[in-house]
Length: 229
Image (tube, rainbow, N blue to C red):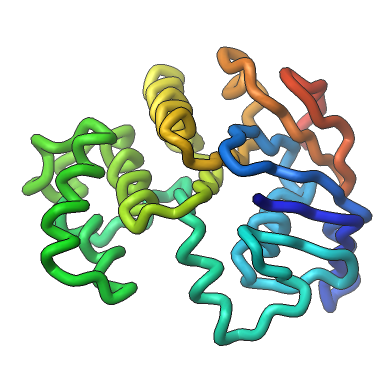
């Protein structure tokens, strides 16, 4: 579960990124977090992953209170989270299999577990036949699937997808969102962060809309109309 209670975040330069944000994402939920550039979405992600701390308010992430967490506990929080980035962040000189396996090696998983888990996850995202290929041999949509597989491989309870369709055409974007919905149906909590209003149109899911550091709406097919500057 991810829970924000009256969270404020002011940066050292005086920028007030969040102004009393409250919401709860329960275990097993799928939600979109939408809003224009500069609305506070990136700050929310950094607070969830522990990259920054709130100025005030409380944040609960999968059992950990983030506003007072000790640095030595952060790796445990992050193991409950799988983060998917817009720019994929794949290692170009490693194969698809090696990119996904690397995420397990970083946390000290034994080789036997890696040999079992990686093929399973690649099958889940439809890339079992691409295991020996390198990132530059894949399409943008396939590279994003590798990124999702890497986020999934350590069996996190929550997936945060940060602008996962930003570099993809509409058809590939729909594929990626359908894959994330499938992952959610298997029991993983999913939060998709996007500034693209059209991305959510084909999905009857909860929409949390943020603008100017405030949650302006929250609900199924929630109101999220805004103008990009």
